[in-house]
Length: 299
Image (tube, rainbow, N blue to C red; front, side):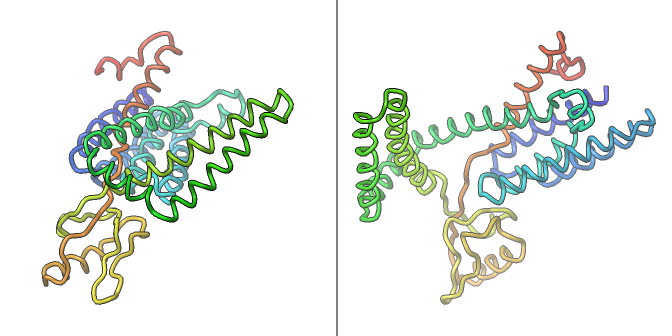
């Protein structure tokens, strides 16, 4: 019952978070901090009721795993701060039973969820990117032509073509067992080059927008440096704007010393989390030969 209640909490939070992520590209802190508080609170209450403090330890381990995953994805520029904090809360609620993992070798539910986030969350992100490309196709093709016509990209393209040619020639001389590998290397080099260029163009043409500084919120990612009189007020390399930076930018905006700022909107990842969560629970219900009663009575 403890796990089922926590799964319902996760489901409700993901529904609300998906709505706000779609609408504003933000996940309110009150949702994330509420998840973290409930993760610790429910674990502590049930630990006291059952006189088994392993539940609290499991919640703490899940939360720490969420911290690790969240920080990794945040500092590599994959997720925003809201996405990272939501994972911390969700993982705390699901928990990580290290004893069962070590003694029985059971794969914890939290690992299934993590794998599904990578698979189905990644699939959702890919579909969102393709949709954005179609929606802003004119801007995309203009930016694509500009990038591919630049001197540096042309030089890189020649190098990639030379690498592909070398791999193809190698297939004529290597043993049969290696022919497939060299062909894969040739095709992979070609595809990786173009996928990288398309990704950079999508980022520039589809996920960058100008907004009034008054609409900035903590955690926003800048697409361009904010400059005033040759001084950098906020750098685009910053991993999410801080409150003090926003205050400086808004102050300059009110004084009419800067105009709009360019920010990166990115992919709303929380709906991907929701999809991964539903797939995880569905798999769990099959494994248990029946529904996870409380959650699926709502679904």
